[in-house]
Image 1 (tube, rainbow, N blue to C red):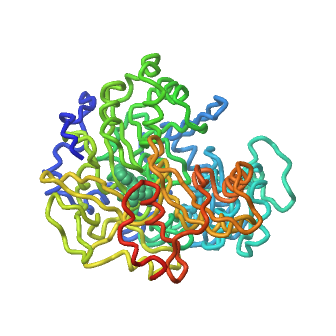
Image 2: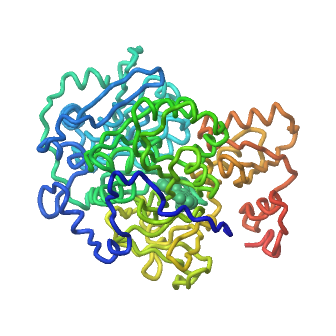
Image 3: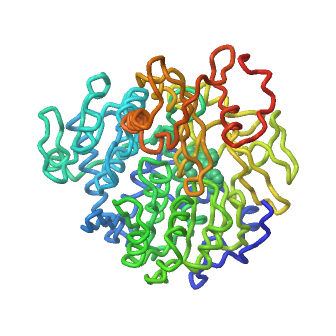
Length: 581
Ligand code: PRX
């Protein structure tokens, strides 16, 4: 706030005409039906994301165009055309249907590194009419178990290394009938495993994609809330209209682009914009298997001539930290358009992009639940650094008070969106009441606080709940607290997000110990390792503070608000509810 700089006309490389010619005009004229007509439907009501992403291109001159260029951590390169992906995903669909007996609506989960097989498997699963559920490869056994148990997934596609990590939880999942192992390095497989390679070898390359209805479930992504375990946000095949439209007009994808989305396929950005958005637009994308490294990332952009780049604020802040001298050692002239999502993007990061890379970052906002970008900066409008931009044409966003009435410009309140856009989530898996509770007075309530200025630009203020956003990963404090209290030394635990200059927030835990345990460094590390092994590194408390007892309501609920105020050195405010509900 208070940052008045404007990046004039958000300069992109206008030698390529932006897909969105005029924001206001497009808003006035926008019709989802028109966008939907650009896609290859089976009938008025039948569409399939897998078909739209790859098979639809086979009838065009994009048939032999590269769809995926993959580079491994070690530098090996594999390239797949749309025709290749179509054929391989057909084989995978045949494996599921003919060899395993998967039926429409069954859940097929992926716990796999960022390898080509995850893309092939996801496309094949969708073509088979089943529901995909991608999981972060960084998850530990508890995080995987919760999601597989809740979704009652029938198949898990994994790798030898990741399977080893979760071997102990597999026997406790009665619905999980098959584990398929992608064995790129020829490891020894257990006799119970289905070998991906052997199964694919036997499978036919011909498959007739299931004629899914636009309302059939297609995608499940688990997302964390304040209370309870993560819930599965479910999207239907209709969502592809939203992926297609926003990739075209927000990411400004053009036929000759080389597009790079740095998100992991375990995250909704990694599916909506790491698969369906670019491929429904027939665009070539490059994927880097490895983790973040400033030098490797710049090398990757230069090597492949990346033109459109979609990344996240924590990564941008890490690039800034790596120094302005580093990008000077590379030729990054190919970059035409750069976007960011997932956390608040500091104004300095927008300006840094402009100064050092020659392109400002275009921030945009959305959620697992919204399925596609809702609010964005566009190539044809000024960026106000610090703002997420304006609603996508066809999206009506507003700020509402706690009674869910719309507030005037300038006032902070709950960020809300009028329901009915194509990629809107359809339910939280088997938690319909929770789903319904998100809709109030004709709005979908996002759970974020924001404000809107007089030009219709939105500014993120904070989350309305206790969910922690660490490097773009949402971490539910309840999930971490539940694991912490399973540690033999821990009596009680309260978890909050602590502000961090790079990751925006990191997880901090307040812990009281059981009698007989002493707080020392060894115990601290032991507790950290305990959480890391079960959940993930993102969910692991970076800091643990040992305290005698935690502030609680009478019913025993930990008062995170007080812990947070204490941490930030803020006045403790109204403590009259302390020990009271
Ligand atoms: O709090 C907002 C934050 O991330 C949440 C959505 O996270 P998730 O469901 O994991 O979706 C990931 C797909 C983007 C939002 O409720 N968030 C997302 N984008 C922004 C953001 N916060 C500030 N600025 C953004 N651009």
